[in-house]
Image 1 (cartoon, rainbow, N blue to C red):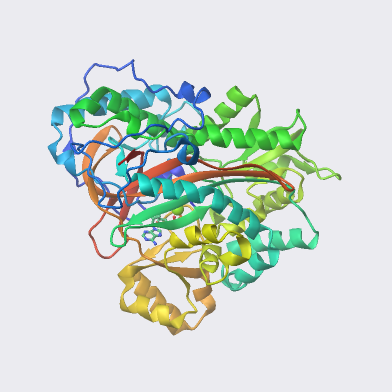
Image 2 (cartoon, helix red, strand yellow; image 1 turned 135 degrees about the horizontal axis):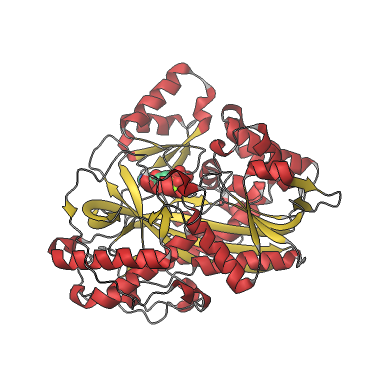
Amino acid sequence: MGAVNSASALSSSAHGSSFAHLPTFSCQARSKANLNSSARFSDLKRVSISKATGLQHSTGNSLLQNFSSPSSTMALQPSSCGGVGMENQDSRFSPTPVSGIHGIDQELVDEMLYDALVWSSLHGLVIGDRNLERSGRIPGVGMVHAPFTLLPTIFPESYWRQACELAPIFNELVDRVSLDGNFLQDSLSRTKEVDAFTSRLLDIHLKMLQIGKKEEIRLGLHRSDYMLDEQTNLLLQIELNTISSSFPGLGCLVSELHRSLLDHHGEKLGLVSKQVPWNTAVNKYAEAIAKAWAEYNNPSSVVMIIVQAEERNMYDQHWLFHVLKEKHNVKAIRKTLAEVDAQGELKPDGRLLVGGQEISVIYFRAGYTPNDYPSESEWRARLLMEQSLAIKCPSISYHLTGTKKIQQELSKAGVLERFLDEKEDIEKVRKCFAGLWSLDDQEIVLKAIGNPKLFVMKPQREGGGNNIYNEEVKENLLRIQKEGTQEDAAYILMQRIFPNISPTLLVRDGICQKDHAISELGIYGAYLRNKERVIINEQSGYLMRTKVSSSNEGGVAAGFAVLDSIYLS
Ligand code: ADP
Ligand code: MG
């Protein structure tokens, strides 16, 4: 899932590349704090859904390089892609090339960098500093700006619209699939045999099926990630995150940062801030949680966020809960799974109390990786919560629906038809599916052995750094074949997507470096229903992540990601 362990996801280079060898733009600090920065996160309170109106096309002089893709000359319509602009952790996208950055004056880069660093510090675009031990536990201790691109990445408006339109369809699809318990159990039955983590999740799911547990109020906060495949010009889905979709908070801030930079320096670059769409993610997510809380209908209840004990991406989470508190007056508490086990109590009527407080909504920012369950205590907590009346975001069914195996099953002929009614919706969804296969497809396994660079091998894991690329695909497939075990069921094979690679200015630790990069666009979606009443089903903001690409054919081509936003072309 896109759940990125943010800080580590952003900075760790699961795939190896690092910035160290790259040329560095010096960023000599000038004593010029731009206090007039136009971007104010406090504006969150006033950001309304459809600010993305009236966007015009960028000028041909832009330093940003346009995609050579389908032209899009329509004006953005507020209703479909409205909202904020931006967000996640380790992905790439097929974005934009800032080919023109070669031409940017070093002095301007220095100036923008300085302004960006000041802006980030003043507006909470921060993560915990990995060099400081307590930075993952204590707010306000050891903060460093989140890594970001100095300029937004160009993204064609037509693809942007396409991705936005898909959000409510995927929301509905997740809901429908989640209700088909047998489909989930059957599709994951072979995986269960070889993957202990998925097996534990399935056990909880099965228990809920056996006791006839119904989730009448269902809250989904999803993020569907895409890359734009350069050769085919298709927007293809990387994955759909149904748990811990990260960066609704910091993602919005990067959009604001870019708008601010363009307000002040755009003229010199031929760029205008209004081409960066407003990012509504944090507001929309907070609103969805608040509405779920209201549906639960106990004003004294609180929202509970499930967190990892160490979390350097805590500020992204705090932003969400800050908005929840300030704008909706809903209180939230933070607990680890172990704390829920120690302090949780399930009342005979199904109410969940934690530390004596009744929990209405449980929002998971942990629990998506086996590392989050070091002992039986954490599994007990997960089961306890699942049994309760609290609204789980996600429920175990929503969680399983977001697995890579289910993504692959849904791509099989005739399967989408079981869950979606509208032919048009089915076509739209199918169009964004890349090739996905199970490893029991011998023909495709042979193809992958013959040409491993065209495939990605994915286990049922979330959070980045788990996929297998290039020669290692071949080695692993041959090994599994030779051993003749059931290990093949632990993976799926996916068509490798090759997004456009473009020179980009990436900023980490106060240093701006130029490198070739690729991008991945995530579109947030929020879904809330109470029995037959759909209360929310919408696209709710975006997250662009950009990471260095490696021409190194072996491998795992990505470096670490930085936060980005988009510049519509
Ligand atoms: P996770 O749950 O770990 O985030 P993803 O499916 O999102 O798993 O994969 C992690 C990263 O690997 C993505 O962000 C993307 O950069 C890269 N990736 C995944 N699938 C593909 C693919 N089919 N083609 C190219 N890159 C991919
Ligand atoms: Mg991902």
